[in-house]
Length: 281
Length: 219
Image 1 (cartoon, chains in turn green, orange):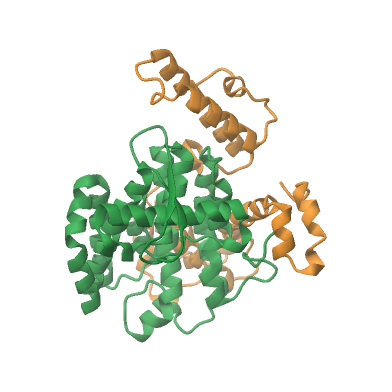
Image 2: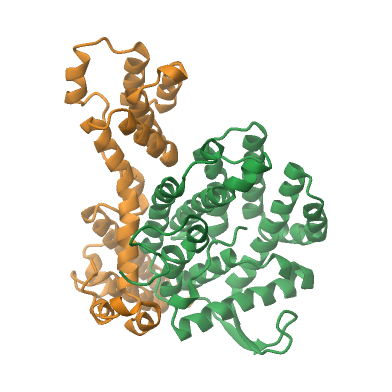
């Protein structure tokens, strides 16, 4: 995953910040419990967003606690977990495995192969637990790979592959909300893919890797990319706003309104009069 | 459909979005099938609550010209754009014969055959592509849901002919979603608790904090 779905913690109050951190720690613990110590390397904030989102929608029972861990041996850290945390842990290892496998196939990156080898067994387990999601993820990665091989530099088509993958991952189960969740996941998938293409353009062009925006390499792209990203984000916030979310809604909005822009603004600068990290207008 | 969705959720018709969501949650907690296994009455009630919520959200969506679910899928944010409905262009055309590829593309678009329209446009050599080419390309992509290609093509069309009102209108229509995001962003930021603002705002702006707390800059 990309790690763009991260909150701007300086805009959260103390209580929200605690909850956000404890959610992340819960996901890390779930990974360790379900897939072993090494699987913790796949931990990312994108899936923390999914835990908060589905948790807010379904409000499942939460288990809480605190303790030290390998990353923080001297510190007691609070955590909370639900059945959705476990769901997100399954998705985390599944997507991490598919990404490594894809990196190895595309770039022959030996590190990616090594990581894929470590995650292979975990992926099999995850695929048994979430067959629908993993099938969609495999199809999405394969479709993207086809486009990359054929060098089809069409951002809409490439983003659509990732949209289908994420839509299925967000559709937690078949119920009244599955359509909305699919659309939100798809909109976010489309956004994340394009954000990543914007962020990686220089590197991809330098190493002759596939990038749907290659024709814009070397130009001043800040305004162009910002316009595109906003169009895609409009779909995301529209779908988020539709859902009856109360719990953790402030954190979710923080991520979509401010956090998502952190890395982009570091690279491309912030829009005049509209720094997404600067708080209210 | 429920008769009065507001009554079903137990809120007044002028309730805020937050109040509606809160009301939904309270009722969902009470009637959710997981908490009432085998209780048909509770299941029926939960269905009503879900429909009421959808009705209110979709209704609001239509009024505010954005939305989700079915209403959003239908409109997709863009109203009926018709490449034939351009008075300004028709006036221009009287002076010169239109390319056959453009006529074909327009006909395809009008009949909902957007891929065929793009194919027809693809027959025009790259060096001969003008503002109109990009305009039609933007329209076909818009209907296909290719947001990025549509936006980029509309921008090119306006670059070719900055004074063409039709090209400007299409670009504006395509960009309206970006404005929607900006507006949502303002609404979100106006809701951040004022205490937090003291930390994050620079001194010159600090006086805005309490105003935002009272939701003055809210929509």
